[in-house]
Amino acid sequence: MKLLMVLMLVALPLLCYASSGSGCQLLDDVVAKTINPEVSLSEYKQYLQEFADSDADQQAVGELKQCFLNQSNETLQNFDLMMQTIYDSFWCKHS
Image 1 (tube, rainbow, N blue to C red):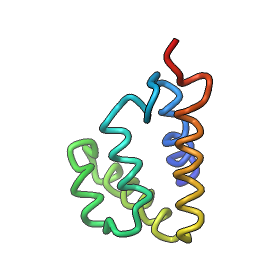
Image 2 (cartoon, rainbow, N blue to C red):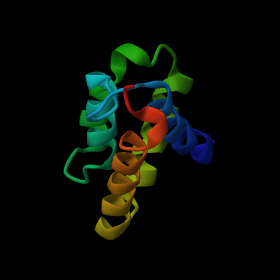
Image 3 (tube, rainbow, N blue to C red):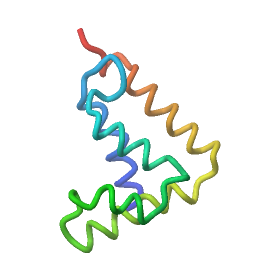
Image 4 (cartoon, rainbow, N blue to C red):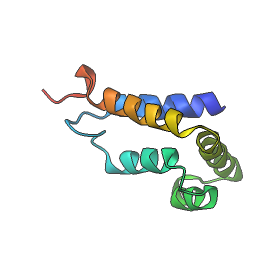
């Protein structure tokens, strides 16, 4: 399930076409909060509360954030770099 959530975060920007970032400020904010180790689990859950309709959704949100909290700063920086690379890719550029 954790892998699925990470893959969803990676795949979503491919649907947004923009020259800077994903083109979707909410998505950019969620990714930023997800990879920021200073954002606590409870703060993250509170931020995404309106999108988590059930207890299972809340649990999945918590597990996703905890997965990133368990990573090193280097891994988090590399994930951010990967997201920027996706945003800057040929497939996400405006024509």
